[in-house]
Amino acid sequence: MKYLKISIYTLLFTVLFASCKQHEEARRPLSRASGTFMKKSADRNKKLVANEEDVIKKIIKSNPKVKYYATKKGYWFSYDEKNPNETQAPRRGDIAYFNLEVKDIQGKIIYSEADLGPQTYYVDKQDIMMGLRDGIKYMHKGETVTFLFPSHIAYGYHGDNNKIGPNESLMCTVTLRNFVPDPTAPKTAVPAGQSTDAQASAGQTPKPATPKPVASKPAAPTKKDTVNP
Image (cartoon, rainbow, N blue to C red; front, side):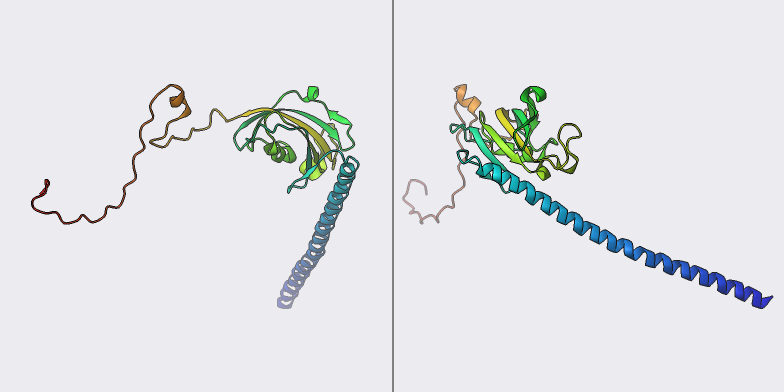
């Protein structure tokens, strides 16, 4: 009976040990396969980006009369209408009002301005196409700009689940009608001694600035017969 128990325990231990070893060995190929898959996926993405950029560069080259500007984010833009009188551009928190037309990279309209209607965007505080999020901050009021966006900064591999397909480069034309500061944003306090534009327009006299303390020089010794003994 004693030998039977020992045999049973030995058999159970052997089975457990073998199953654990098989489980560990079975996980190794999965890890290797995962690493191989990630590398292949990264290579495919690099090729995809390179192919899209080649197409965009050919389009730019085929239009020598149009001046395109390359950006650090990996897209290009040209001015359809430039406003040299404006120097200010939208900043984080500003409310931008613009019109938008979206075409495929060959120039076929996907969404017209009428389809999309007037756009309102809180700069850097709303989730919109990555390219537009960056590009609109290059613009000045009254300008119309055409952007050429590769898919990785447009709608990526999933598209917009409507008319824009996966991995589709886009040509977007934007007219920035206006932009204003967010009225709900906290206002910056005016330093003491400085007048605001509102005060100046109301004819109020600005308060004099408080002079900064100046290190005084040692006083010369006074004589007893001076006015201030």
